[in-house]
View (cartoon, rainbow, N blue to C red):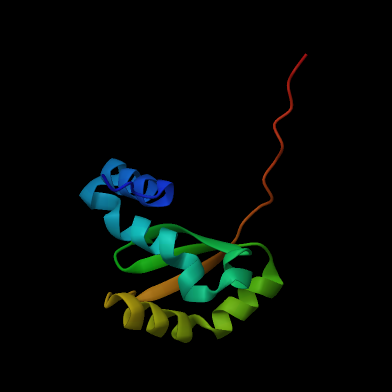
Length: 104
């Protein structure tokens, strides 16, 4: 009996839970590191795909500028790897995550 890796099972579960409506976004989200590289993936992440437009949250202005300069390369690389089109990418500065504190 062959055992699947935990990563493969987790990805399969995510696709099943997302359904057909979110399948393409999930695909982009899970492959973001492969498309932009580890450094940029550590500073950004896809947040929404709507009508072929990908919205990406970015850590700060510096990384946003870097991604804006690479936008056409990112679109081309994604298309060459997965044979899927992304019409446009819009980068947004994400606010830092707030830590939850327990109220007394």
